[in-house]
Amino acid sequence: MPVFLQTLKESSLFFRELKYNACLVINEQTPEALFKTCDKQKLRQKMHRLEDQGNLTFEVYREEEDLENWLGDFYDMHVKRWAGTNTPSNLQKKERREFFTQCVQSWIEDGILVRFSLKLNDKRIAFVIALLENESLVHHSTTFDIEYTKQSPGLIIIRLIAKWMEAQKMTKMEFGDGDEGYKYMFTKDEWPMHRLFISSPHNFPFMLKTGLIHSIWEKPAVHKYYFEKIRPLLLRSSFIKNRIS
Image (cartoon, rainbow, N blue to C red; front, top):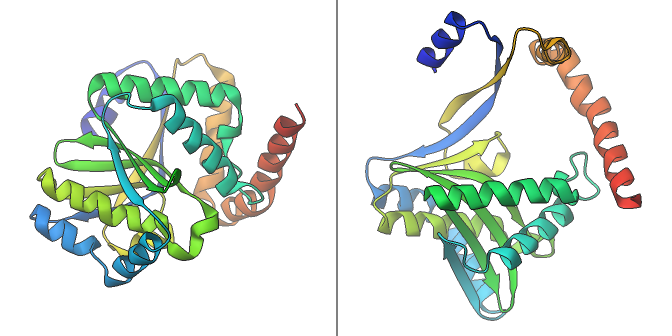
């Protein structure tokens, strides 16, 4: 990051850096220690309860195996998971799904994608889309079936991923953007996340928008009001518009 920022300073590009969020990380010395961190007795018990309901399967895909159906299940469940909340899924939009599918295909071609899912009988009930970087596995997108909330499939799959990582000799799991409460069940280590806005020096609408975003994030009171009042209204109106169309 320091090298990247210095390069931007020496260029003619417009850029702005924003301290954006936090990324919680499990960073252990050995693969065995990483699995031990995720091997919670409570999760083992919940997993046994799911197994009592039928055939429970942990799926791991590196290539394009069943990709169309798998992504279709993921998209539908992501929309279902966030419907009725202040942050409805943007994957309800056809163009967003098409773009994300292209990203997934590119990551497969680059050899850095792993798709994990938890399947109960014939139905997938939890998903994690992750990217590989050396000894790290980085969570990109996750979701689970809210009908199984009490069984915590979104947490069970983390334990199973850690077991898979142990076999791959990996020692670091990054939970991605955000400091949601469930992540603290596994770790308290946080890495800062930054957001960079970059454009030509003549893109005035972009520069204006960047300044507005920066002012919102830099002022806690404004930031809180935007995320609690304004942003939910914008997202909800967009959701309703797409459902109607």
